[in-house]
Image (cartoon, rainbow, N blue to C red):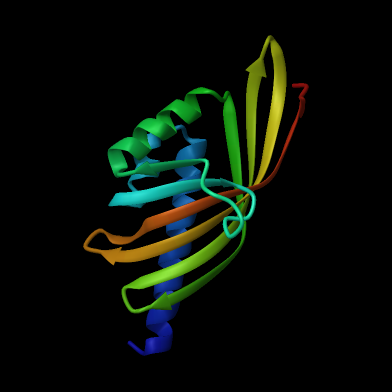
Length: 152
């Protein structure tokens, strides 16, 4: 296989991995979400540009990630993650990428149905593992959020 074809295959596998994370979140499958990470994968949360701010939280390892994801999905009646544009650069068995996402969360707060919308970006470091491509590091950036009442 030519190098160009190999890179295309790798880029598609990485995009599938990013989309699998969203799918598992929407299906309330925290173990599936955690499985897209390496065993020692790290997620750091940022409110705004990570070049000018410190992380507001860090979670390390699949077990801790699964536990965190389980807590998060339990807060929402439903979620819909819509992944948008994505750039990926593959260098051998590692890669970096940035993916835009609109994350919609439906919840009830004090008896009121609420829609929480988040504009987020994933700044990812990927590794090729025996399991296939996995996310080794994710900086999850909250660019902005909107919270409003929602009717059925």
